[in-house]
Length: 429
Image (cartoon, rainbow, N blue to C red):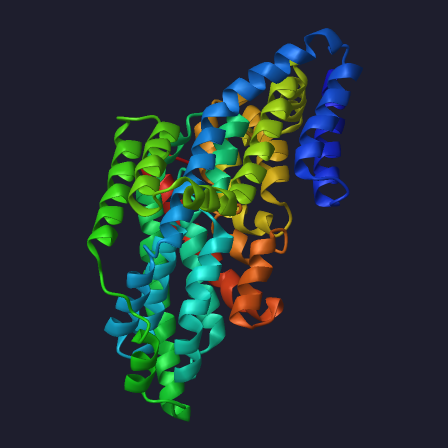
């Protein structure tokens, strides 16, 4: 009875999110509360909710201040010199431009937001691609590969969701994936180079519509001189990242202090500081609300025993030994799963069940989370129709979604598989 009720609750959450009849926040709160009431846990619901909220609070705080910190840095032009440098150094070579695009998007994606990455990188480089006659799909794919791999970072949405859903430390979850992340980024650079070489041959066959030198000069005209403040901002970012990964400060504390220092250095005065915070607050608050709602969901599902009952029933259905293979096939299917499930429904609805089933087969829950992060809304998110950022990408690049998916899905799937192989070799999957 409890297993059936738990399954119905999970399916209701998935249906509510996927059908877009209700917001993820409402679905993650309303359906578990109803499920808890039907399970006869009315008196204990308050405790379950409080426990769930306390569990996700550190990650919610980290995400909030990370968005504000990197948003402020983008506002003050931290990434503009990178654009100018890439434009100058590529010298009109399509292969170098494609590699530079991946590098630029990787730097910009430090804020963990796909939308902001697309809004900064694509408009900055689209005129250069057009002036050289380069395929706009290559631009979209290069940005997508960088952003997809970058979504694995500790402050990226999928990693935070996975840590929240499984009650793990986000830093402890990510650190074993650092070599995998580096492998994914290196793969994106190699693929971009190969695609750029192919584009170079295509342009040579048909003739380029504009000279390389003219295009580079045109794009570099807006370059800004590097100031002392720019180097101070770079130092602030490096110190925040160092404090984050070294464990000197908790993640939320690192971004809190970094935001305070960055605000004092770049936007002195109450009025300007308020303007910056209000400009980036909507995106940050929206995600934080979903994280707290996810805490309610996991708190009720775990506290009431519904999640354990569903997992036990699921494990009983699987053939002997099948539970131990869950991470492998989950990693392989992670990109296709991005085309079917949005991040909230997958990480808060499906991942906990898979992790509990796998744990009954002796698999650490961290390995299941690592497997999901090989592609589910990481490498897979820039081509998924389940996320609005994909439509923003194709709109900014002025291409059709179908053309983007045909061009980019094989590339992102290949990166996901390469990262999966690395994860298996390292034993983190």
